[in-house]
Image (cartoon, rainbow, N blue to C red; front, side, top):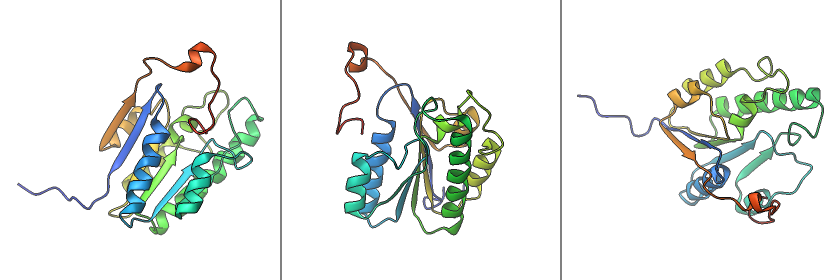
Length: 182
């Protein structure tokens, strides 16, 4: 019996309707950085036009982080979202293929792949995502977050955690909280 390759790199998926997917991934980024790992976070939906707490602290910690989106799907035109997703995907492929990282976090990639308000398959093909996962550099860990993970990504993953909403203050009318959501 052959021993498993502990250094092959893992694919971790954090999905589900509950809060905590990005938070879990960002905690992992901090842990990896603390162990001397090279980390990059690419956020597919969040826009660089807004300020996020994780961006502020990651810049201070020397963790590379990029907001490549234009915000929620209802805040911009479909074409603006499509263009941002296409650019984000090209950027992601370059960063992964260059192999300069130990941990690559693709935050809200699942959300992007689940967009159904307008077509995205031509600018962010799930087949290319699977190909990138399978052909990433040896030893590179990929962390993919967001609701509605595609079954194909779940099948490809080494770990899948589904966050389940049990109770949320949003239900009581409390909006997003500074330092908790952003």
